[in-house]
Figure 1 (spheres, rainbow, N blue to C red):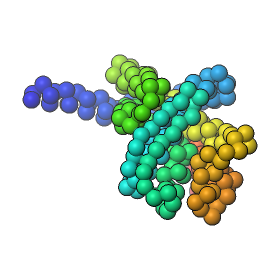
Figure 2: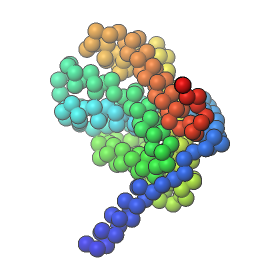
Figure 3: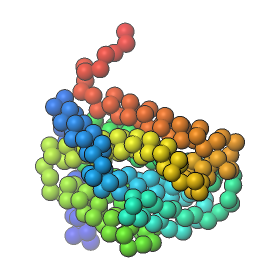
Figure 4: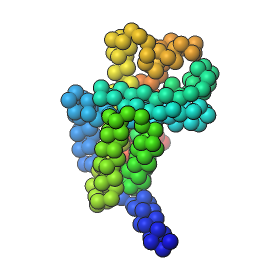
Amino acid sequence: MTAIAAVVAAIAARVIAVSPAPGPADDLAVAVLVVAAVLWHPVWRRLRHGITIVHEAGHGFAATVTRRRLAGIRLHSDTSGLTVSVGRPRGPGMVLTLAAGYPAPCAAGVLAAEAVGAGHAALALWAALLLLVLVLVQIRNWFGLWTVLVSGALVAAATWWLDPVWRMRIALAVTALLLLGGLRAAIELVGARRRDRRGTSDADQLARITVLPAGIWTALFVAAALAALAAGVILLAPPGLLPVAA
């Protein structure tokens, strides 16, 4: 029991460990790197798997809190994903479940930005690791299993072996990826709907069970991503950098 308590205490100490808040140089360097990665298609194709994981986690979380039965998550090599839940095909629960996917990376990015900006980069990384573990138990295909395991290994390595400064920089990069990648994914939905006339996107499915057309849902996803990005910038800006209204 003493050994278990020691392990728990060691993990707790790492979770609540304090890291330096990012300075202007950190913010600028990470922003440039992540913007370049998100805009460069070969790199984005790989990074988008991480956005898809959080997207599907959003569907799964919404399904759980609305008391739908979560039947599993699949992640595919083309960066798409599928979360299956069982329950009423219409109604608030289904609407919330469908609507939660695209805002999920952006919401996670805002929460991470608040933690990193307050000097709790370790907490942000451990929260990411917990999310990956929760997704892992719902994965129902081999590619999804591999993707989540690799992502989890990278995050775990950052939480356990990096010093506080580099832990902050990695957490900052993850935050930027969630905010910028979430925005790009929402924007990509516009083109995806034009190419795919089957009406399988989240926006099209929402249009079939609500009074709002798919175009409005798509616009709402993009607006939510832009709002989250603005909130993230404010939370991560060094004190005194942003003007304060008198």
